[in-house]
Image (tube, rainbow, N blue to C red; front, side, top):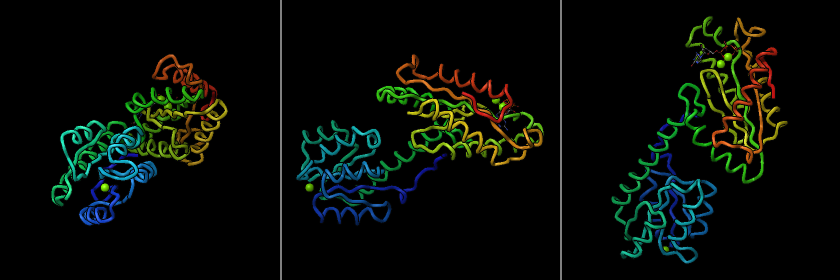
Length: 305
Ligand code: GH3
Ligand code: MG
Ligand code: MG
Ligand code: MG
């Protein structure tokens, strides 16, 4: 999905402070421009951050269970919270504490009693940086026509996927998909309608592939790649067939297509992640591509493994 830049009013800020009066004060400063959530202990803060990742954390330094430094350190370990801006709010600040804050991964700090204007400006600056970075990342890793992931995303993610699945001694499946007789579609209806057809097929594939760990990538012009971590040959074949069926069921008119509709062909292959010799999955993609060739060669509108 293509992202847009989040506005401040869509951003969630988690206020962490063991004193209720501090939480109320901070909330009263922030609630006019962001969505506020609160936690009254370090443990609760970590739990809330993992359940629902906030856009920024305002973190009290001195708390009875886990202090701010420990909370910050813990949040930096989890991939989903590793880059969330964390601003320390502290009454005591000397050089040692200041250095300790930076060392555990603080993004900034403000002094208690807080100056509302300084706090607001600091939060807005960090949120602006974060939302812009997220937006740019989304542009870099998504195809602008279909909203699917692109090849840059594949290059970035596949080595991580292989590593993770190898650790769990499991397999990865890859499906390569190509629209049937698409050149004839363009020739007959024009490139703009061709683009709309590509968007529709992309969205059907995306809606058929349901597990959050799976990724659908626009691999080339009218070619798509589906990455299925933790899937065996039977599973990959099942998903590939579901996709082929879903596209033909949509009955997108194509005068020169098979049975007058748009269809796709798919090839799939799986491999234990430990057996990958390269970190880019090239050999498995090639294997799936060979199967796609067979699907094309033996009639189209089908999946072959
Ligand atoms: P086959 O059944 O063998 O796959 O036949 P085909 O006509 O689909 O052949 P091929 O896969 O080689 O065709 C690719 C066509 O996809 C050529 C090009 O016109 C079209 N195409 C590629 N990218 C785009 C795009 O971004 N927009 C549009 N409209 N068409 C595209
Ligand atoms: Mg405190
Ligand atoms: Mg093609
Ligand atoms: Mg084609």
